[in-house]
Image (cartoon, rainbow, N blue to C red; front, side):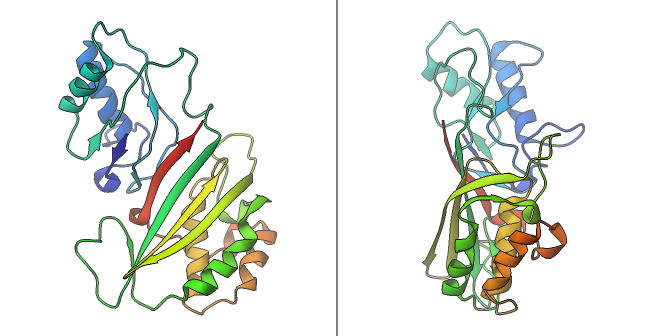
Length: 238
């Protein structure tokens, strides 16, 4: 499924807040004629964060085809959420626990003047960024590391070791896009990494500082937190 996260208070349900999970549960429950059908997601995106490859699961009885269920659910969803594909899976499938790799994309609109067409899906940075320096600085983040400097654990155990398998950069006219894949992410980890590499890109930090930040295991050492609107959950591998 995919959604524009601009007008949501994140994926996870919250009292008196508009959330992706809340809208999904309302739509699916309406189709199933139930009070509430719980939706399980592969990742809990923050307020303002988007998704093009979010995976969800739910349990319900349905006597018709999957295609008919897909159409019925989408007919009940608001314009900023859509389920793109739907199929039957095993009863014990949990999209969060079964996920092995997750991919995010972060988009920076790098131009002197803002663009209304990019404002909802990218971080506007006016200063010219050194893409080569950012790419070089990020190489130390690939592999298995303790990423405590870049986020906090979403679970009670507090484990902050993660494995980043890929950190790719590309430039397209006025946009700089970074794609990062890992076995799991800490809370706000991608936005913290992008904000730290931004400091290198604008020339405020040397490339070597990023490795020092990584080794410090201290949240106070990382750069500014990149804003949420540039971030999109793009793919889940099971």
